[in-house]
Length: 212
Image (cartoon, rainbow, N blue to C red):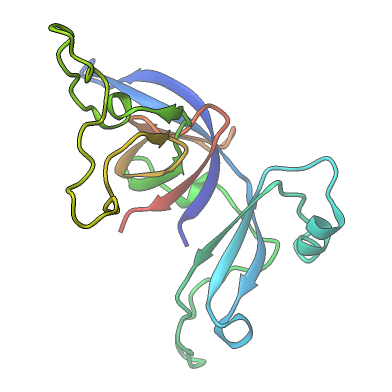
């Protein structure tokens, strides 16, 4: 299972052997503790729950949730998995995760492609020009339609169709970037640097998955 939770540190730049410059985002990884394992027999589906961070004081609910793993995680994320088939004694069994196991940066390699997901920066309530790149109306000749959204539907049916591009909340939504290349892995400091930008603000939590 190649999934990690990380915290966005910030962006910097690196140079390769030919002097080409690349912008990279540095991510502070784990350790990610396996806090719970769900199975089809008990829960109806198969999943792994990972914890990230360390809280100074846990509530009773959090303490009960993390009792088996002994972790003090502040962030919990669940990832669905596929249960493996039964193996006979003469077959090599795959390595299975156990509650309390720790996952680190060593599960990835430099040059590997990953999928990074995070919550983008929230920008509040925005109009159609900023939110959807609408064009402005004419400023001259007494125009009153400079930043107005324009028509939002016909006379029939008498309602606004779903999906209409209008003013509203901008940002603060899940964004996924695929095929980002791992440029640097620092096992000593648990850091991963990926080429390109990563959604979210500094200190925001992101999910790193191995690309299929």
